Length: 114
Image (cartoon, rainbow, N blue to C red; front, top):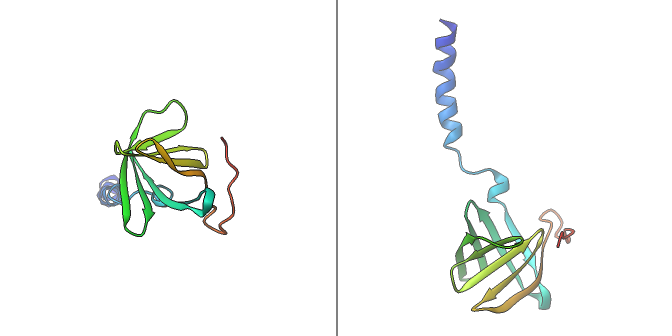
């Protein structure tokens, strides 16, 4: 009898937990500071990256295979990341170079792995 009551309580809890949005870590927005004072923001989701290049320029880039690091593209704009460093190319021209993810707690540089 106690097993049935426990199962009746746990099943709705498991369903509720499974329906919660992704974890805070997955939803975190990363701000990259690049050469020449440029910057952009990226939010990494399973298989995609949401990238904000400016006030009105938001892109959804699909993850594709990369020889090293991670690569996202929409066939025009490509975001390359490795560790805490990144760069963005638009039509094969590097427009955001030397980008490093900033520590969101105090906006200091995070040590890069690449």
